[in-house]
Amino acid sequence: MIENFLSDAFFAAIAAIGFSAISNPPRKAYIFCALIAATGHSIRFLLMSPELGQMSIVPASAIASSVIGLLAVLLSPFAKIPAETFMFPSLLPMIPGIYAYKSVGALAMCLLHTDETGFLHYFYLFSTNGLVCLFIIIGMVIGGTLPVFLLKKIAYRATRKS
Image (cartoon, rainbow, N blue to C red; front, side, top):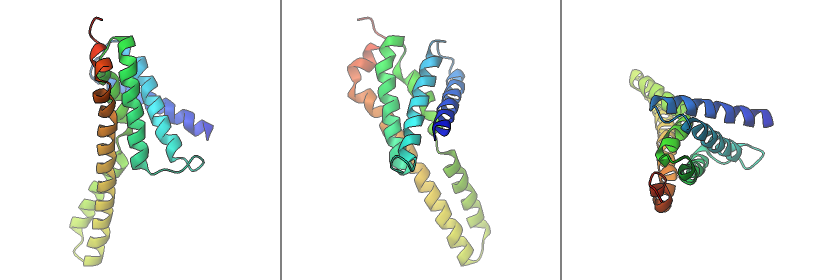
């Protein structure tokens, strides 16, 4: 489990660095993005692991996103960079791509089947994967932005002179 935990954190950090490079932030932002993404993704990994509770991916993603948002807000004054610069690239590795992929694939198969049994089976897969994907993204948005609104003074002060 330790090896899986460390590889999960490592690959989340690498993905966050790649996603942050797209928006061309200051160089010192990369390390913060990597650390925040590794921490958030690792929290989701631990919450979902069978050894520690086996939480569903939806609440685990919401909790991990809240931690990412909180860390971004709290670390932004030290880096003198807006919290959003850390938060968005750190959230992107948690986007539920496999659920979106399965949802679109099931929709295509749903439209290709003319018999009711096949149609209903693929419609079920489409709706299940689509709803899971939708609720993960909603949880990530709420969890990531809530700390910015709750800790408004810290988030605003990050780029202002005291």
